Length: 45
Image 1: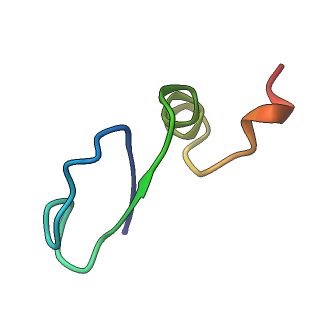
Image 2: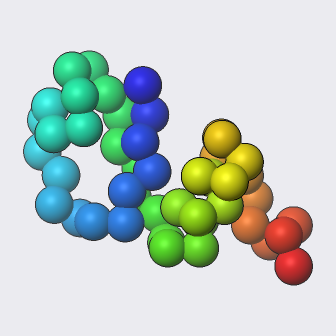
């Protein structure tokens, strides 16, 4: 699993067992939530 997080409070296991957390901007987190996957927000102008 992968998680887009805007919080830097991360430690192993916080976002799930064997999960990967990516620290992203609020805009990136919103775009990922809408698209359902990571996207290049530079293309969302």
